[in-house]
Image (cartoon, rainbow, N blue to C red; front, side, top):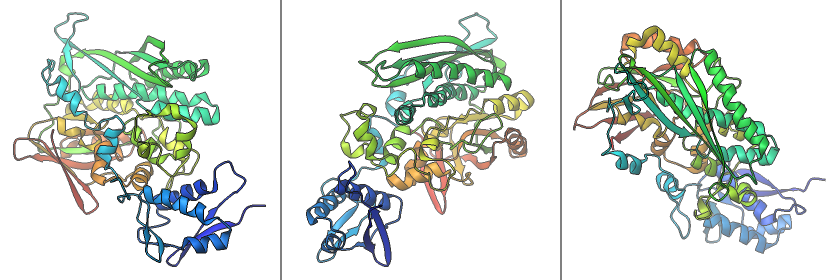
Length: 496
């Protein structure tokens, strides 16, 4: 027989808890987790009143000390506050708590050991040789491999980041190693789609490095990563993208890696005459955004749009304390506990507004736009003035390209449910959301207004939504500038 619901009242709305005294999780923790979930998902809003603890204790047979303990935890989290003779009122998931100010997204992101802007990296390389085309999306050098003066070379390294930890959680919860095939794709795409932005779509050689803790990552996971890489390369070749495996390395480094890290390196040569060098991004163009969500013709299933950026915050802000308790190997013990798995969901929970679960959305393999860009450059190379892969830095990535350009993004694609859920659970400001995540499109094509239709049709031929999401104007002050329109708000960003 199911236990009776534990009710609490807020103004004219009645909510219920389902408490199980026989469960391993203590009753006070059940109250905390379910109350946190109700507030984080909007079932309880700021200002709503919770019935007095004495009333709740008498009505449902829960010890007053248990209730006091639960609500003290909620108060410390900044979710409720005590009110004289009135019990507690809901504050909301983003308000200050009793003894510690809740950190904003940027500080939370940095406190977790990551950076949205990579300011330190760009500062470190500022004095290095920028290559043949200083304004290009990737560093380009002479073709040192062949010595051909008409060719140039580009090499790029990146990986799946902390998305592999999400795969690990799924693997531990379900026993299914196949989830790591998506991680192999993530690692490849984060390299390949950067190379697209300088015009590379052919003669690409890939090497993959897998660092693992052999005690936790067994042979079946390695097999999925290796075979998954080969399978995805073959699929890209079916669509005309010339990309090939050059082997790789698997390192057992348990002292360095608590689970698994998957990285790739891509190198290619191309004629200098085919380089997209970044100089074409100038005032007077339109920006066509290619959607990051949906299902392209060359994809097996729906894509949530998350990509492989911002997953450290997405993981901790969406997933619940269940994962902190069961899988301590998935986070740095030096991080403030208030920043570790603070969300309301488990991987199997439904994602609001979506047909996917939270886990399916977070683990959705990063889409490559290579088939689209390859087709576009083959047929209409002249019309592409610039390409920007909205990866690290999200919608502010464009600020690093062109000179004295005001990027205006005032007709963005709809925000996919995964990003809405992250913002709702974490109370991250929308300005920071656009700086960390792609928010709906991850590839931008810069072209003239009359050529936009051809770009949009090229994307739609592959089942990818695309539209003109903005334009470029001349910026004042000698620096690039960005304006993002979110509803009635105008969010502004300056180049670093």
